Length: 277
Image 1 (cartoon, rainbow, N blue to C red):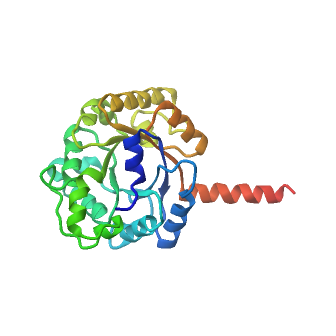
Image 2: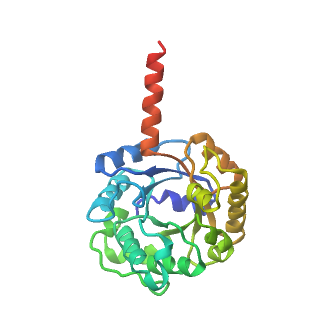
Image 3: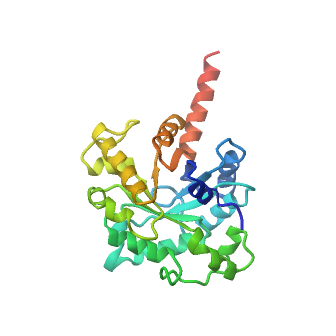
C-alpha cells in the first residue's frame, strides 16, 4: 500500500501540515503534491475542497486529482471535503451518504464533512464511511484500490476501515454546544475547526488573520475536548507562521496555505522584489 502520511502522523502523535486544494487538474495537483515532498515535515496532506473550491466530486474530477497526488512517490495523503453539510444527515442523509461514497471510491485517504452539529449527524458520517460491520458503505468500485496502490479490490476492503480517516467540522453554534458528544462518537477520528464559519455562527467577525478573542476561547475548548475524548483536532490556518503557532498549541493537523493563496502571495512577493530594484 502507498504511503498514508496523515495516518502515520496520527499514529506517532506528530503534527501534520497540509494544503487546501481549490483548483482541479492533474498537472496542477501533481505540482502541489511534489512541492510537499522532501520537506522537513513529512507528515503532509492535501485537502480537495469540493465544498467551496472549483473541484467536482464526479465525474472523474476527484478521482484524477487524487491519482495525481498519490502518484507522487512519498507524497501527501489526499482527502476530500464534500459539498454536503452535516445538516443533510439524519432522515435526509442521502446527499451526505452518496458524496462520501464518491469521495472514498475515488481513492481518498479520508473525508471531511462540514457543519456537523450533533452526535447523530456525526454517527451518520461514520456509518457512511465504513464498510460493514462498522458501517453501511457499499463495496463495488473497480478502481479505488489503484489510487491506494493496492492490487485488488479485496485487499482494499481489508484495509479501508482502519485506514480511511473520518473528520467532521465544528463550525456552528449547535456544534459547539454538542462538541463533547460529537467527539465521543466511535469512528470519528478528529474534529476540524473552521474558524471563519465558526466566527460567523457565534456572532463575531471572521479572522483577520487571527480569530476574535472570544472565538479563540471556543477554539481552545474544542481542542481540549477532542484530546480528552482521544481524538485528533485540526485547524485551518492561512500562513506558515500561523500554522506553527497552532502546532505548538497541540493541534494535530494544521492547514498551512491554499494553492491559490500560495500562488498569489508568491507572485506578489516576487514582483515586489523585482520592482524594488
